[in-house]
Image (cartoon, rainbow, N blue to C red; front, side, top):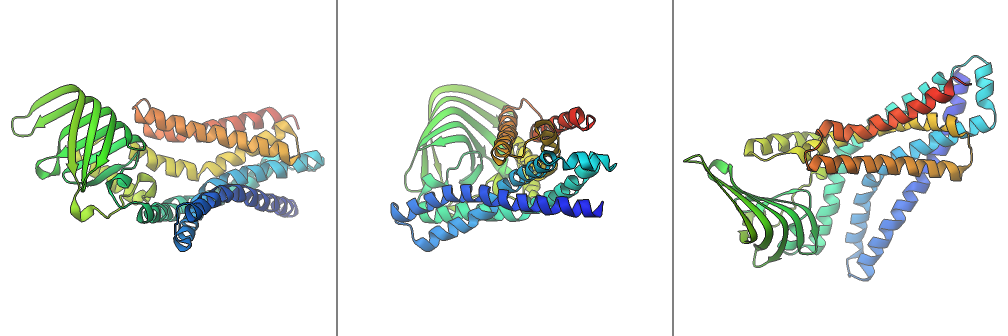
Length: 362
């Protein structure tokens, strides 16, 4: 069994190195084009541009490692099946589940490594990446507005927008802080526009719902407006600080931010979703090990092009499930835990189905 294990590992790491090189090259080329555009068309200093590029590399690994692992399992198993080596292994009395165990152990090791990357390394480099871009491009308020993050650079206000296109905003939440930094006014607008004027954010909001809580009399005031104008000054001491997005935070920071928002009376569901997503995605490699093993038994192909196609389809479906989960989460249709772990459950179920249908026939 040790000889067989070493033989499979040698084949696997050869395929994994090949897969990682291909996927990394594809993603790097796309970003090299952006870097070239920054240098040539926008006049960005080459040193600054290279810093941005270097900060992107760990973030890239977060995507290429799971995909490369899946393709490596498909290629390794595809070759063993095509060369009838799986039949020989079965004849020798060695169960396919022992081979699966090799991939699961590898998947666990890779998942733990990816967990460290996703918790410690990638958030830090992701933050440096966007901070560097801000330092290059942002000289005013406009660039500080980022979608899907809580903005706290404004005096006694916290702002959240779900989407931004130029100066157009969608789903704008404005939390106004009163005594003891508690939220006492909430403004929600389906659409909005903004301009920056001397460190003042001038907003034109449309289709607005307004809710004010009188902390002394405990009375509520609610109203709706077709159009609503609001000026929000920046907090001078924070005007140069780049706010961390949820994706820039370590798990410990996310936990602290969730507690802080709950204390402020703000729903932290998106941060809770990010917390579960980070952990769930880290262990996607184990789920891909099961899927790749089961799919290879069902498809029985060694051709790289077919296995590349399977890997891309599987990864595409997996990431689409994450996007769907995030969308359902934003509208409070699904619990954060379920929304972010469902992609792994779906992949394991699919791989388990293939495994059940094909392993016993050998």
